[in-house]
Amino acid sequence: MSELILRGELQELWRDKDVFALLQAVDGEVVRDKEGRQTLKFQLAGKTYYRKMHTGIGWREIIKNFLQLKMPVTGASNEWLAINRVHELGLDSLKALAYGCKGHNPAKKLSFLVTEELSNTLSLAQYAEQWPSKPPATSERRALIRKVAMIARTIHGAGINHRDLYICHFLLDLSSDPDKAKQDPRLFLVDLHRAQMRAVVPRRWLVKDIASIYFSSLDIGLTKKDVYLFLKIYFDMPLREIFSSHDVLLDSVTKRAIQLYRRDFKRLPVLPFT
Image 1 (cartoon, one colour):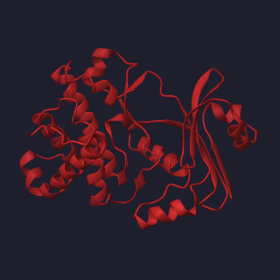
Image 2: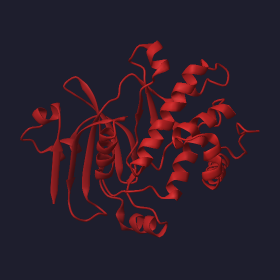
Image 3: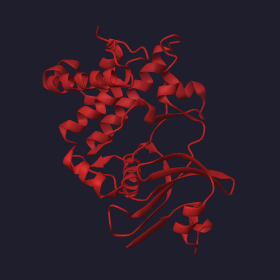
Image 4: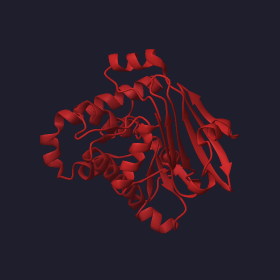
């Protein structure tokens, strides 16, 4: 089985070429090489692209994932489909220009994804790391909180869970007018290679996604009011209804966020409510 999809300028640049061989041999900077997936940054016709090449994770890893009740990622199709779906929802993400898959064996099939570089962007984690000492205007901080909550609400409402929904995977567009951007920020949701798509997101994965946002925001100086704002936007209901209808979910989210923080920093976090 072989599948190849080309879009945009790559349709013309790679017309009648062996794209699989071309991408396996392309020169560039390796930015990640782990678990059967290599990400390489390369130049073509004056533009910068990223090639994610999957060579298979092996049956042992596939079986391990199933035993842990996790869906294994066996190729580039997962990210390709997730990016396309996120765009269909009216959200910003990577611009995917090429996808290919070759082979039947899920443990060692060859597949790739090519995306265009998102220039002039900064991860929200980097952007917010100075907030404790140099806090932004309240209106700017709240605009970003609203945007993150809206993105999370939209993907979850469409049956998509990210699995790595940390604020480092929201890229802030720095190319627009700075004053306008502070009131209506543009965020790109990236790193979708492990995303899952269903009719409804199971509670377990809702907890993981929301807790990942919370955990990765614990050291940027957010207040109790900021957390409440996120909840109101995400659940699209008044706080009183949220705490009466979703108290068990929120308790699980808080416990999970604390677990993640203790795992990474070997200490308890200071929560906005303490």
